Image (cartoon, rainbow, N blue to C red; front, side, top):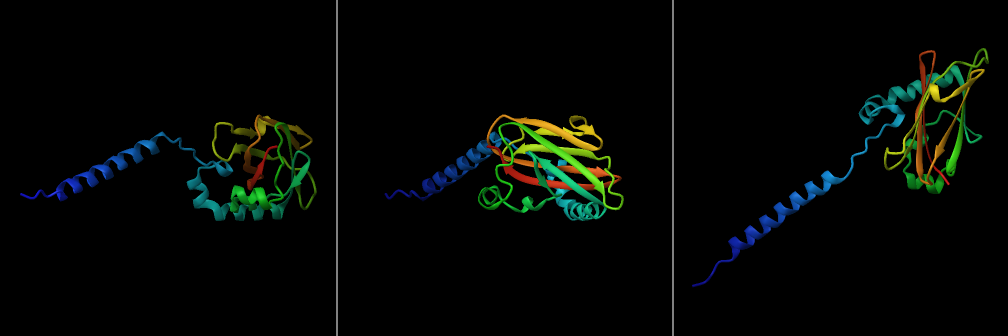
Length: 185
């Protein structure tokens, strides 16, 4: 009498596949989920309103001259880094090595284009690691000193890593958004 091993083969394959499904689910449930908060919003809100946000930047820049200083280096209201991966930043970007381990300085000044007067600005910024949110540094109005409508803040980074600076600036109901990828050395 010949024995038929095909049913055992199918049971073995089914058991292996089923155990791999269970293993995949258990492994995936152990990985932490980190939610992106670019521009101080959930990523779904950014996806839904990205075009509106970029149009808001254009409107902001048509009304105001924006000066953003990070460790004495001047930046415009930029979101160009959002299109680049961190590896591209490391190789090609002018935004490399902007931050340093230890104290870092920020300065924000917004001028009206018509009158050249400094404007009151509501600031919301986050300095975040690219891989986790456990070291997020949230900088809001209360973290800035206002010296004649020139806003200054300091923050401390404890490790060399890749960082994202993102947030918004609100002046007279017009909002400008910034997104800078860099690293600390």
